[in-house]
Length: 480
Image 1: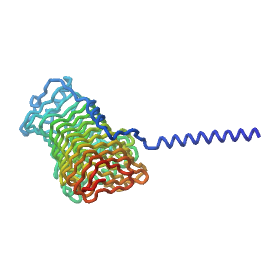
Image 2: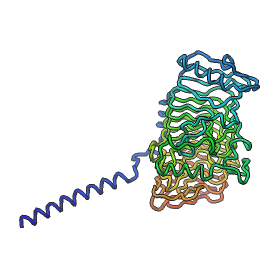
Image 3: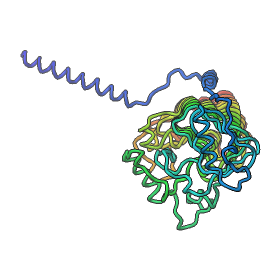
Image 4: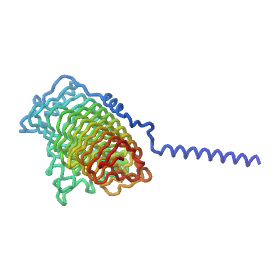
């Protein structure tokens, strides 16, 4: 009998241990919750984020590119002059690299710490159309996947206190004869039989490397491949300022701060209608302030990202503490967008006092992901938004997003805590609110407060979401 109770006691202990283990495993894999989200006044946190962002300060010394052999009439390449001026400025401890009014031709510009690249009003920097000039390859990223590729047109890698300022223009000189045809779209110069980014040796090969976990330094592309470079990419940088300048004719994404922090994008104009010409895409980045900008783009105006599929989960850095205010959005696939490269998650995004208006703007606020991307997207606050016209939806949340094949996987996205407050829409397009969640993970805690949407075909289409909270909200004259 004593032996029986001893065995019974051992079995009970084993059962309790296994039970606790299962509970711990369940808790570790359950989606993280955000308790106490304050829908009444989230804007104090937005103010605190803006106040915390450090604007870089530079030495007063000026390094004029003309003093280093630059040609302001565009008659010859100023590539060496830009490199020499940046090197001299860096060696002196930093300062301003000054580009006077005129036209300059150059290859890629690589910034270093404590340097402000300043374009005087009337200055236009035109980037080389020779792809060879963007070699050797550098550590960069394409649609949320890191690899070695052509250099971005303006690039900074692991630098601190950098800026691009002034009232001049950066011209990427991309077009239907340069960079854009690689998109594979006829409208951008692609011709049947030409090489393109979706060919087997390009995107499929890179995606396979990401899936297998191939080290980034072994993912070598560049020459012989068709991946377009970004325009301005601070990679693992701190304290970045982009102010006053204009970007046109971008090969790919325009401003792409990746794995960076303390970023200010102020009074910048992006006027670029090429393929994937997103205006500003913070990725794996924190403490970002985008203010007073104009976005007139061929893709999303602002798209917040955090890596694609296994790369996003490998890096494991969410994009967070991002404030977008006082901006104007015209053409684009979306005004302020989260995704689709969002596997690392996005949280604490504050969008206030913006204007969106164009017959070619598809959505105002958009969240896009799927079960290959996954990701947790939470705490998205929108206030004082004026929308003149959008095509598809004022708010679109889609957990079935996919433009490529095989977009289903085992990574259920979590989307919660979305607020739209003080929103006026004159022409809402096809949908007022369009939410396509998942039965296994419904979209939760969506609130519309003081929202007035006019002239929309379908006021609401909601699948797999908790009840939307309406407060003083009218769609097509009907109060909800």
